[in-house]
Length: 459
Ligand code: SF4
Image (tube, rainbow, N blue to C red):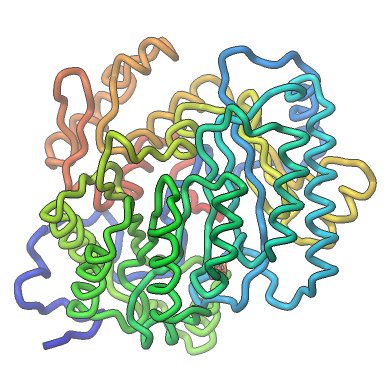
């Protein structure tokens, strides 16, 4: 029998973990971003022109010899806005407006290609995110990628990752993506149930997800990933189990599972605010952790390996995620497009978050940067340390060699406490995060932040 998503009673799943809550943390899903995407948190990035000069300083310096480069392009268009979406997306742009946006993106890449720091460098990985990159037509995709390759050639690129919304895919478009060089196709399926997809405002339905998976599996991509979200509105334990079992039947190379959170600028939050609700109409944190735990167990039974707090992979030897792993080891990221996040030589930046100011600045020949942050060595160490902990296993020696910092000496109290609670252990010189720790890793990571960065939200 199904239970409602917010119910704590269950037939054995709920309460199995008995994860203690941090002081002051409620179990209900309230508004806010908990996901640790970077460090220091975005709310500390500066909007002053003086800070942006730091980016130009790096760009005017010589190319580094030992730092990998990634290229990211942000496509902010979607067929429809999902109720849980917190990104700036546009659902009303015609093809002329989209072409103008793509031209602006190329102009931005051209500007970067002329700098001493980036000229002549070839990306190790390329990532198309959004929004919905697969919203673009075949012609737009071919033209865009040809122009990008002219500026930053892909002949040494090890991974080209591309995010898709299933309802925008045809067999021909998928063929075009494969021919362009996409190696990692990521399908934003989120759930296989049509009612849940509808209630949460998704544009696609399960029929389109199955059709896209069918084409993707036969076209020979190196890697097909599917995204799922645990705890969408109206999710039930029974449905979640069916959803996981369906994903296993589809046999993707990789599955990424997020726990639903409700950031401030979502439709769901606006409705909560209008009706005076503090608690979001989605499963509580305990239930979401239970559901992800159950999913990890099922995937493991089917032969998958859990290789981060959010991912399972069929074959860890062949299924790599270079974008994630390189970024978490300090690669440079040349990021173009509205609202995109990048960094060079330890300086983070984010582009203008609205398409109007973005296009205006690009037209003037300027870099469309909205805010930036120059990290010091300690912040870079913490950034890599917290991000790599999300992988579930990280080498202490790596940090001694790269930063001259021993994490055990730098964080004695924090590590002792996490070990005592059973979240972390030390094995053969590595920090190993237990399953219970992985299921709530983003909450635990805040304990390693510098004092002034704690309690920050990623907005
Ligand atoms: S498809 Fe993704 S980017 Fe587009 S509205 Fe939905 S959540 Fe937002």
